[in-house]
Amino acid sequence: GPLNTYWENVRNMYLPFESGQLSGSSDVYEHEIPGGQYTNLLYQSRQLGLTDKWPEIKRKYAEANMVLGDIPKVTPSSKVVGDLAQFMVSQNLNAEQLLEQAETLAFPESVVQFLRGEIGIPPGGFPEPLRSKVLSSRGLEGVDGRPGASLPDYDFDEAEKLLREKYGAKYIDEKDVLSHALYPNVFSEWKEFEAVYGEVSKLPTDVFLNPMKEGDEVDIELKPGERVIIKLNSIAPARDDGSRTVTFEVNGERWFMPVTDQSVAQDENVRKKASGSNEVGSPMPGVIVGLKVKEGDKIEEGDPLATLSAMKMETVIPATASGVVKHIAVNIGDKVEGDDLLVEIETE
Image (cartoon, rainbow, N blue to C red; front, side, top):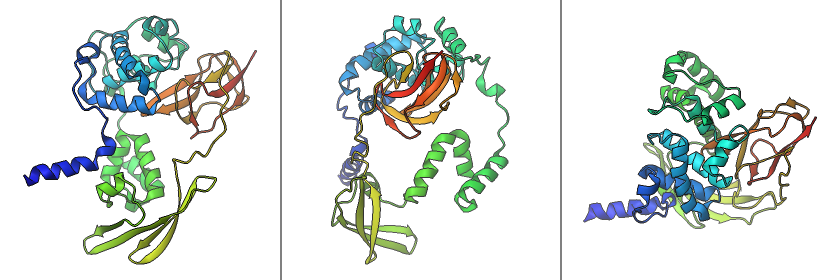
């Protein structure tokens, strides 16, 4: 009937989010990946360039779960297991090697937080000696008891004041303050996106998910009684820097909009690969979101050098040797591949 037809059409609009998993899988009895995480993990693996290793990731998930103590796998603990599984696959590690090298490995941040006790104490306790090795090598102490019990009170009034000063009073409401309190990094990223692209909530779902083609026309209601008709006239060829000029008509008025085409490779230079204990490489593909040192800094083995983000999985990259930071090969925002050189250390 009409209802069935409606939902079939809605499903087509969300095809960009489909995982490609079209049937059930009996091997869930072996790896025990929760259903909601299964498709997310499959998508993450593709983005990390591990598509051909998906069967191995599922096997490593079961192995990572046992390494962490066979913990109950719910949000966020299931993410910890998934992050560790992908890390083990990308680094070609088994459980024994993971434990042997625990003091020097660049574990995903979610794993370090779990071992510290930031999401609570697992029913069977923490896995030892893994926990002690990871925390001691990073100079961290475990959290005693329920993490929330030791958190200071959150000052919502002060947070609202700071957010209004940063983003403008008319752009911040109580919901924004709460969002920032719960997910500060995600909120900041959203505000950066909004600063570039504006208010996108008015766009029809199909237009937001599927780019317009030349000749397409869409009618958008900005608010009751205010509508705009937008037509995409032309898309110019990409320039060397990856930019294009897109020509629109907005209520009959022609607009010329420069945009960056992310599908055009902007950096054709191949990065140097790390080799040797004095060269620190990226453990997996991702984006550099933080640098903890600068050239000339004295560091000790295990000190944090940089933070890598890969599909919601953050990893703090530790120093592989003591010495002086001789060269930093990346900047914040750079995309890197596995083993790309990040930092060069001059050993003493």
